[in-house]
Structure formats: C-alpha cells, structure tokens
Length: 160
Image (cartoon, rainbow, N blue to C red; front, side, top):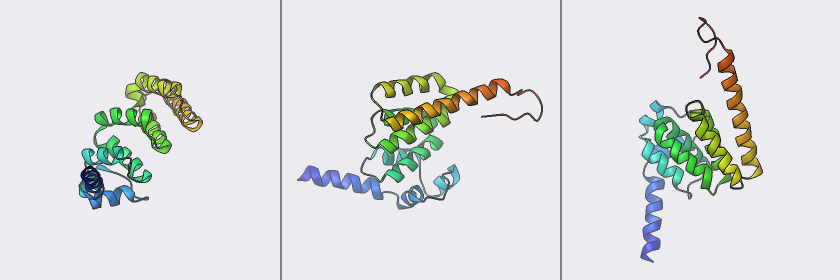
C-alpha cells in the first residue's frame, strides 16, 4: 500500500510540479522557443522527465520531446534514440524518428542511418518504417542539394 501511494505521489509531483510549463507543453498553436520555455521555467530536465513519464498525455510527451531537442541537443540525441527504440507509444516513436533526423542528421548522419536500420530490424510497425524511410529520403535530398548548391557564390541559397 505504501509503495502504491509513493508511486502515485511521484507521478503527481512530476505532473504538477510546473503547471505553467505543462500549459505551454499542452498548447497547440504556440511554438516552443528558448524564450517562451524560459519564461515558464521549462528546462531540459523537466522536459526529459515529462517525456519519460509514460503516464503523461501523448501530446505533452511529444512537445516535451521537441523542447528537449531545443534545450539540450546533446542529451536529446541519446534520449530520443532510446524513445525510438522502446517507447510503448507508437506516435512518440514516430516523433522521435522525425526529430532525430531533422535536428541531428547532418551532424550525425551515420548514427541516424544505423539507428533507423536497427529499429527496422527489431520489427518496427509499418507506419514507423515508412516514416523512417521518408526521413532518410529527406536527408538524401538535403545532402544532394548541399552538394549541388554553390555555397561560395554570394547570394546562393544555403541549406542547413
């Protein structure tokens, strides 16, 4: 009985530890920026706790995933890779794949490719497999555009 109460208290303390941060994470039409996250006290540690708390609502967890990628990119790579591999919510896994590719692929391309292949080999759902394949095609197009675009020409478009 005491363990159950302690677990409940732990869940409640995470869920309600920062109501303003939770409100920002739950708001649909507000971009997550460093400034607006700082204004409500949403830091990387809190975003990670929300993401890892499987009892949280899906949308809040996905927004926490994005917040973590903005606030602590080095830590986010490891956490998002783990969520892609094992999260029980398939939509969180999909968002982890998208964020991994769009935030990290140009710096960590081989690791992203290896991770996506490993997840596919583990038996990813058809939807997750399709998302990862689409993200890899997006990466290929981006890399090709960087190879073709004359970046030394003044005024030439630069892709990031």
